[in-house]
Picture 1 (cartoon, rainbow, N blue to C red):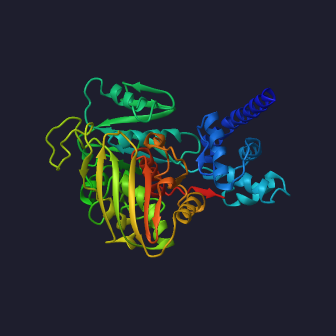
Picture 2 (picture 1 turned 30 degrees about the vertical axis):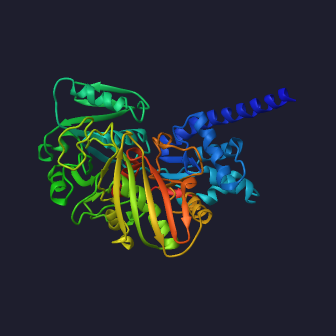
Picture 3 (picture 1 turned 120 degrees about the vertical axis):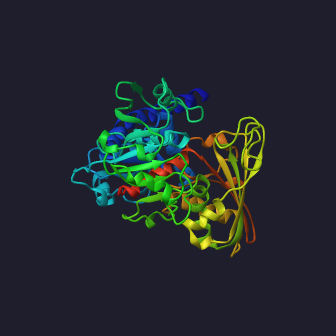
Length: 479
């Protein structure tokens, strides 16, 4: 009996592996040629390993209580590969589940998809990609480079043309390329990187990336490098107001600027999913706010709309950053001069107040503070909220679970039911907020929510979404 069970398990596993292996080339071609990102219940399958594809299918049971087998989704991916589609995100998991389990299988899969995807059926014509320049090449800059490079292909919407850095000493180019190639937190670059010393460039997965050395924006004429109408993503943090960032607009070849830090003054702070519709074609300088603001605002918005928030306090347990010192040294800010690798450091955060810039209904209702801790990445926001209505843990978790899958914030919010999840499990998550449902506390009209976030990669994904919106890219998500 045990031998028979073992054979069944091995046969079932082998079948799943074979279907996943057959999916991979189809998924890659859909993404490269048509900018179609195929996912299963919010988990992208593009670039996924066979094991990751299998695990993505396993998450369906968490939401639906039933298995969705790879053999049930594979015919949908085959059909998609034969269709002419506009750039979009297509959840093949939701489509396959509806077809097989909700009485939609009276028609062929092809006819079903024609009906469900009519809004993204395309004539095959393509638009030219928008040029992008990364001004600065630090933690966020290099992750943005990875995200831009992974979208290289015929259907790309944004094209990384250059990075601008200070320096230019012997060996600088090799070191920049090495930092892109290897990352202590996020692992090796997925592909091939070579250095072109003659042209001062980095070649990565077919992308030619000009490296420009300059000490200030005014030193650069981008048209000299064939760059026009570009979006400059300033990830240096040196300038955070309109006057400072406006320097980029005086450069030839630049049309718009995006800041990867909280903007000051009247600068629009955009949290994609919350207030991205505020982006106007006439906006030339925008901020993508902070990593913490992006992590907490989507959840706060949902909770406020469902239950009402009277007031609250946000405490962030944040990984250390380059702003701190490895060992004790002088720092102009209080406590931040103490060793980041050895201490928990209480410091301030403007994220609680910044929420109101993206979601004005919470203006004046939140306080906030931060504790920097000796981990290199992934942070935790603890939301202590006084609600306008009573609830319980099960109801709040059910609401957030459904929102993570079916609301218009499903790109921003993920949901975990694990009792064992810890910070390192979330390195590389593309969601900006991950609700830790097992830690939720609700008593009458008081709720405490624990929200994980990859303060580097998850935030970079949000920056990319804002950049796409600024470029006029409209990625439709279906169904």
